[in-house]
Length: 185
Image (cartoon, rainbow, N blue to C red; front, side, top):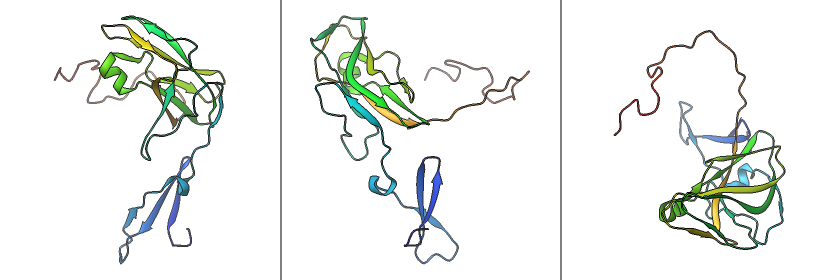
């Protein structure tokens, strides 16, 4: 409990604050949103060997930061062509987290340019340069210029699974229905 009588509950690496509703006699609680200062930002160590600023969140509610191309010369992607675009960034992620490289919606919508292995996963023990595997699915060539925002980076916690071999699996409503099994609309 903090000095205001708020119960602090640890949830994995995050903290949820629950404060009793004022005037409540039944113990009903409500969730109180926390700001970044209250919960503490996840610390990610970074080396920036590029010519561009360290990535920042565009708004208070942004899930990801933009990654920028770090190029000596422009890269032209013809229709169907792919290239690994360097960012100049090297990360040290906390244990139990990953960084996901995701497409930028504007590039995908306007030009058909996306991240080929979306989302690309950067493991916490990887120390090499962050690269973005771009592909041009559009109909015209696309030029990637130095400093251009080419992808988003989202840092997220993850769980590790313990796999157990079994002779069978429990039945479910879906069963073995795969791609398109619920219809096309």
